[in-house]
Image (tube, rainbow over all chains, first blue to last red; front, side, top):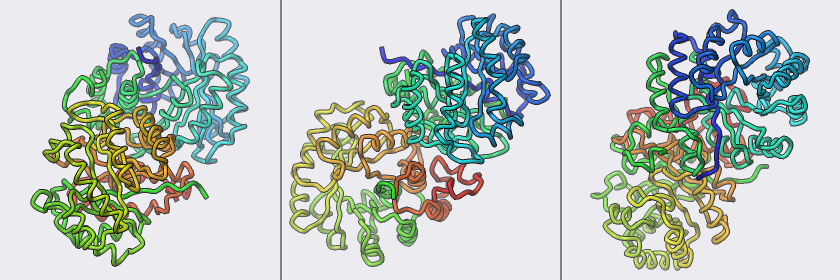
Length: 307
Length: 307
């Protein structure tokens, strides 16, 4: 048995969040069922936000209830941004929530109108309530490497917000590179620091593949001891109106590399393509990770199917 | 000043070798001039082989003479397979040759009709003559990780042929992954072994990007201490009749990552795209590394152009 790596599938939330294709709730449920069938048991499932702000996530409660009912063993996480969102998530049956704390003032303000410091009271209250009620909490340290406005983030600033989340008692910290501009040297350095400071068992990482360094960044994190990764089926998560603004690191790309390297994920690589084939007509454009061209042209052999 | 990394541009040889597009000698000379202008001073330029076997390389002498005349400072390497090829290369002015020794019996036999052991006498004679005449020699340890017929290569087999080349006195060893099926754990392990055994100053690596792990493999080699990499402009080198059989790791992808990580290559990233734009109409199909979509859609900023 190889060493275990945990994959968080973020396609249903980060992948679809800004999607303009006409994805219905029924489509999402079918997508999630296929993801679960492929062995993805850790999901960033949805977001409890104002449906006027993010119409794609208006069906959050229905999605959560479906998974609670059909896959009670799954670790299905929902993003929440205030106590009302937390209440709604818990009422729908959610037992894991995520809190996004953007490190850079300018990126945070452009996303939410608030600086990260102005989020702390709200997140402190949510974490307190989560701990009282046994709800698992992830804290995203978002934009931990690069801000599109301010460039590279100073380490002491990243640590200030990561420390805050850690000290409040989150179950997991997840530094992210939402624009996909981090490089492996930065990733390796911060991951080593985080592993030493918080422990690998409390750490996940989240990469986008904009500059085609997604797998190299994942390798840098892996080498630093990280064993939990966010990925998105088909590499969803790019903005369809900004060609080249690639999405999340694709689940199929990372799972394939991990399996080749001898890690175990519990995921059936072949079944990931069922999800890709299901989603592609709905998205109305080609999707799929960077290994898709190889995958579709390959000579089938057990070694090379990721089995 | 960052640490130096040397890039060998293999587009003119490995990139074009199996190309069926109607690339003329004049095209190749214009390609090479643009590569040199972009700062690529180390080239795998051509191959002195039977023109009936490899018609694309029939103009080897002319290409070598052009570079000797117009860029005498360039390190321009030609593949040779026997003493006659060596003579022809030297007569054209070539001062650096490469010898391809395929590790696996079955791959070697399918390529040349001979096992690697059956190549040793010929290569011993060439290396002896090269050393007598001051010609620089690279030994390719080809298929050092994976053989398409035999799977993973046993380490003792790889070392047997690498040791042979090293003991004969080659100036550089270059393990290759010609089918692009190696993974970072294998790459890192063999590179560490090679760096310890032969020294990083005698080592280059050569990856193909078939399974999208080219950059991750390069990172693994870099972490092991390797500072010389083969790449191909535009990711050329795939077989145009096998979609998905991606070519070499693209020069623009690796140079961009290296520059972001703080390494110096002497290459002007922007100028690489001049070469891509020149070649693409000749190839009659889209070319370009995996960062091309991002590159073409990016907001121009000094930080993000690889400058």
